[in-house]
Length: 140
Image (cartoon, rainbow, N blue to C red; front, top):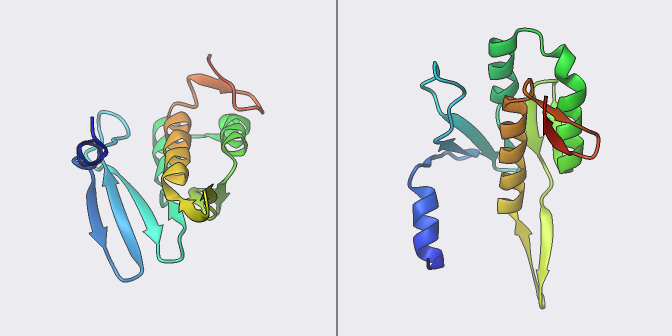
């Protein structure tokens, strides 16, 4: 598959709203059967990417107290590197990896997006998996 065709295929389920200070990306990812609202990632003008607190909010709705899973959530975040938890709720990536290709450098925003999506996916099922301090995942 050619790169342009792959890019179009990946992007067909994503809705994008662009504002002066941010871009909202609505992804075709839903938290459970009873949710009709897709995941919205917020890409702010200063370059940070966030889930707006949605992942932990949905987890709390489903599980109630998520305190027993704090260590596992921390292990997910520390194993992925660039992701932080702001205000105890919001998953955020502030810094992206700079890649060097020959004499050119570029910022790898897709790598950051990939890490955030991996964190969201793992945290969404944190009650069914074990995550050690190295990020190794196994079923409970």
